[in-house]
Amino acid sequence: ERAMAKNVEPFAYQPSRISYNPDSDDMVVCLSDLHAGVEIQNWWNTYDTRILRKRLHKYLDEILEIQGVHQCGICHLVLGGDNISGLIHTNLRLQNNENVVEQLKIAVTYIGEFIDALQSHFEQIHVHSVAGNHSRLSASKDDHLKGEELDDMIPFCLSLQFADNKKVHICEGCAEKIDSTISAFVTTGGKRFYIVHGDKDSPSTVVKNLTLMSGTKPDGIIMGHRHHNALDSEHNVKIIQCGCVVGTDDYCVDKRISGEPEQCVFITSEHRAVKCLYDIGLN
Image (cartoon, rainbow, N blue to C red; front, side, top):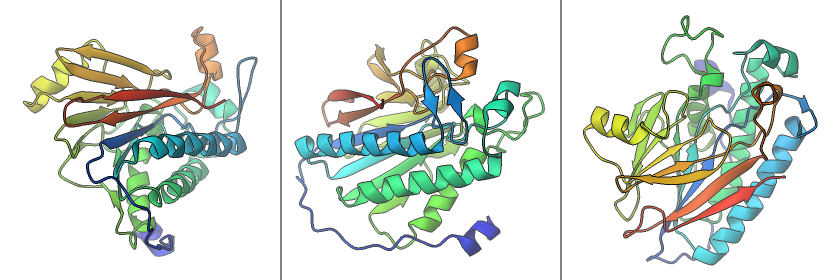
């Protein structure tokens, strides 16, 4: 952290003059499972660092089109984990074309650029994050120490990049950051959302487990990990499942799982946790 603080330069900040609807709803932008640093070439998917950037640009175009419709003042950007490819599977070591340090640099740079492009279109951006299983330092779950996830370095680096930007709030070490694997936020309309990556949770039990653990029933839960978009409801709690940017890799092929790269954006209001949801393909 000392080395990063010494070398990372903050983005230049110019206040925008875009007008927002003061009575507008909040927008929640999910960004999960980038798997930066992996190189994939199979029948279903072609992916590398260049294509990662191309898909993020397409996602930005879609978000700004949605913003043109809703004119939201507040954007919650949810980083759902697995920002890097990591080294937790042997086939990942073969597919990675960057070591984990370079993967982290790519993820920080691209996510920073993504936020910088968004910030001129919103009054405020709140960035929330959880760590994914691909960012653990040990391939073995048994040898992993909780809290040693490289995904946790990303909000720290972003807080340095946006130190001079009063519109971007990086929720790194804030009260709503319950631990490295569970985070939370409350919208302008008073709706409470929990965030998990999804490797430790199942859509069928996540509402019960998080409600009992926290003592507070949320209005919605956002999760990733399963690489496809989905929306479900349990006991009036919305379960929003975000897809992936990476698409089908060799691990998915071995498990007989395929699907297109996709992410989701939803609008939340005072009266509805999910007023509407946009299912966005990135191919």
